[in-house]
Length: 523
Image 1: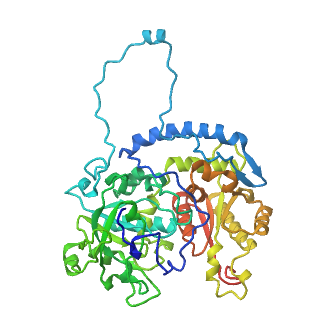
Image 2: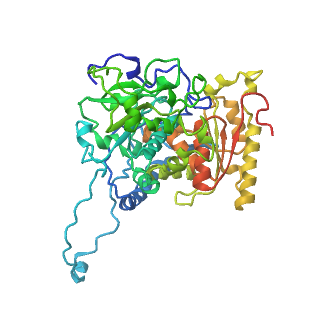
Image 3: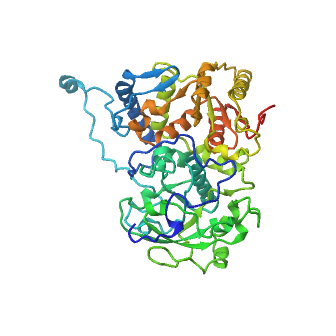
């Protein structure tokens, strides 16, 4: 965006010095990377689209197998696929494969020829909630009979998923269409382009199954547009914490060429008034600002935008909030509980695209040494988060006492095994365990191998080179979500979301390992 001011709140991933929730992952485990961000305008006819993609994925799997797994390299139980020498794999999931061989011409001559069928109108390739293909200015593509809502992300990838889920839920209770942005890189390198929300999650399936209709920003505004749009938004961040006196920083408005004029939200949106250790606002307090009466009482003092110096009240057509990660229903740990509305109405329906599910399935088969056409066996996934969680170890007398040792984690795995035997009659051996972790100690990994557990070494596998640098973390999450059992790290949002997926999608058994001091997980 040309002429950008250097205001602290307009640039960068997040200029906040205030930490996320106490259990939040400020740095998600080995994160993935992205292919170049390119808009994909998919038809909103989910059943037909899935039939085409299913056929395409069959061909894609064959191509991927032919190119990759014939030269598979394995080291003990670490799965590796060959690197592609910085080129994209020849897997085109959008190509339409041939589904039959043309018969000889003489056979065709003997066949009765069908009557000419009337030409069908082409399916629209844009959402019914916009006027048409993406436009240079987003306002030119908004329907007059529809109201919208949007917000930005500013954390690690899992927390960004939660932020968008909060946006979508808030849209559902305010009768507005959520307009969802892209995922922007936080810990995989600033040189990595964003990745479209719809490249990760199956948006048409979500719309169909959840009953909530969402639109992606690249469907509204042309990503190649040079038009800088003015937009008035609510500044939630400054109303819920007391250390930073500006809106929450995010790079998403820069990517979207938006020049934001912010109005500070009223202090009553905060869940616990005047309490500095909790930064949550509530969904219905935020929703109040979307309706005319409450909006009118709280506007009139906007902060000028950094580019055009425009002073705009919060927009009524495209309702906008700066940051919704800390929005909640009743408490800051909503997502850990079964009542959580963002899980019940939004996140449970955010299923992976078929492409990601297929690639994850190939990795699982290969790590277990199974034929590529084999049915996926039931398995247990383990996520162990260490890394920057060491900053939360003040209760441990010695640093080595902070995190649960592997025998404690193995005990939790045994509990999951036993529950699955009792409840489902499924016996999963220790050799059907896949573990992911950011731990870097080689001796720790030797202990893992001694347990018979498997891991996927994305560096050795060349995952980033083959699919892009977003994909290691995306595939790890997809692999975890496909498990019948899951053991995670307490207070890790990456683990919390994987646990909910396993429980809801697979009726699986789960446990969370406590940590922070010696014997924290004793029970």
